[in-house]
Length: 257
Image 1 (tube, rainbow, N blue to C red):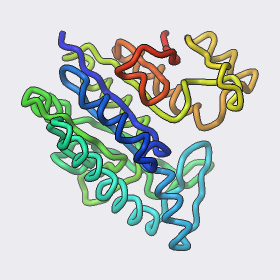
Image 2 (image 1 turned 90 degrees about the vertical axis):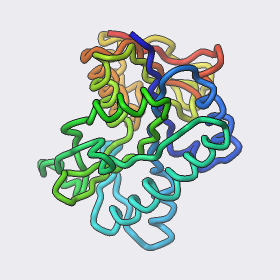
Image 3 (image 1 turned 30 degrees about the vertical axis):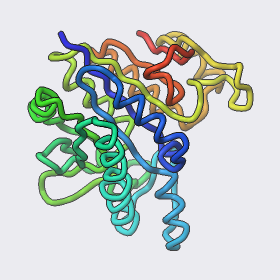
Image 4 (image 1 turned 180 degrees about the vertical axis):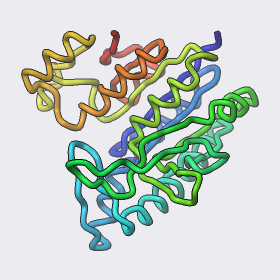
């Protein structure tokens, strides 16, 4: 099977051109089919504060009211997505920006209200894997933002880490899938203040131990949950690390079952 790289870029990197452009050059240089997924959460938080829109984050997830949804749709599917696509086109990477609504790429359902009402947050229900395959066969690199829809006219905010994992799962029958979660740290850290505390390998057993010891930062928990879910569903490899790991031989966290 052909190898497919699915790369997710963290929101903090998106804000810094000095870090974003080298990352995009590395992504553009990846050989073979590839997909880029991005959020933009830190930019959304900054704009919400400027506009007086309350920011609420619970368990690493953004509570999304109507005003927040309007803001992040404009940012994620508009300014952030199109800037990334334009930069990649300038690097001879034929990128196509997508929200979940485009070609019904990512269909979701509204998250049920339980202990927390997350508002207009969607949980992925279906990936249009046929459409993604068609784009990849045409040497087009999809650039997916963190906006999904329910095919009834409603947009949703959906965690970009989850979208990455769900796309990987949907395409694992046709490709040898490697998922890379790239952000501002070298990988999963025992101590965020100690650059030498990188955990280079995590499996299911060591993950449970890290949870019991409260070693992992709260924001990393959804990412690791998605990671193990993807591996169980047929994704071949998952890496978590710095933005330059996708094209350079540097240490990162490797996740295995």
